[in-house]
Length: 250
Image (cartoon, rainbow, N blue to C red; front, top):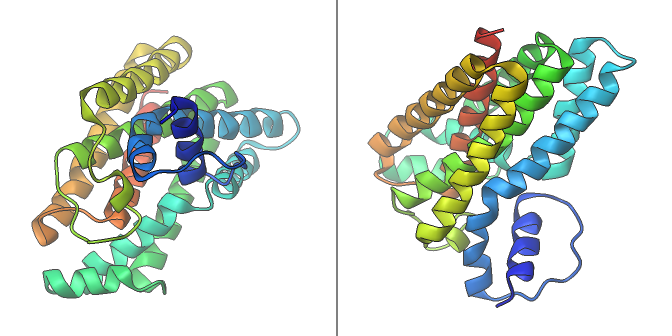
């Protein structure tokens, strides 16, 4: 198993970026989780670049919308789809089994649509309320830290399905993988602190924690574990927590 193939598989798993044909194996796919936060750094960098370039000729809100759209295209709305399915299941399911059944349904329902609109709208409004520089570094930190948040959710809970989008990485990242993810998240936090201020970095980190724990409380109480959709919801809530935390300090 070559590490370069693992990295390419991680990029392939989380984005739509063409990476050729990396050598695949179950072990290599399982190992991709240790590179999640680093891929988040790539995604956040693309979003930040689009926002900064758009801000040269467009108003802040339009630049924020362009950046958000670019990230959605880059990732194929991978985590947003999970958020919508998780919202449908948790909102419409009265029992554990019924919640899992709703999450498995590919159709989007009322709860999912409302959650998706609210989260995306809040992201655009939050980014559009910052300076271009602050918004750019907040995006990098948010995408990096939120993928590390996903890794922590995997490491501290159990996967509930026999197959699904979360199954390939359900074994966890291991000590070295967790360290790599946390180091990448810390790098994003340092960049955020250097540009937007250390108070923004601190509160942004607290926002990621609130987003992580808030979503975890919702699905752990109902399900006693996680699905791939739950991980998508954790990522989205953690990312939004970072952005809101940064904005609160500007």
